[in-house]
Length: 57
Image (cartoon, rainbow, N blue to C red; front, side, top):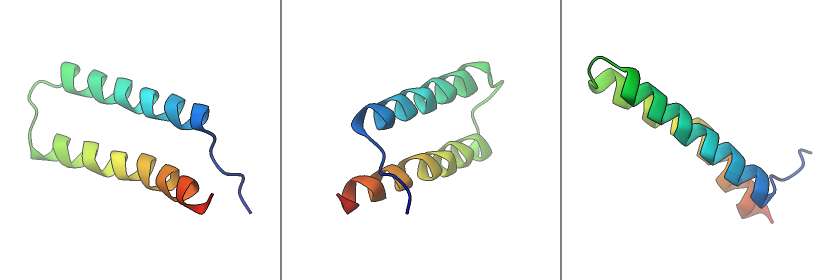
């Protein structure tokens, strides 16, 4: 069994993801469909495990 994610860990992971999104959006020459799709998929990979961890408690 995995240890559940604490609130401080979830906040830290979320902030790091938001910083990464900010860097990707500001450094991209143009924001197109592929960029948006990549951000949505990475968001799912970050937030679904956090959601499941909080739901199990």
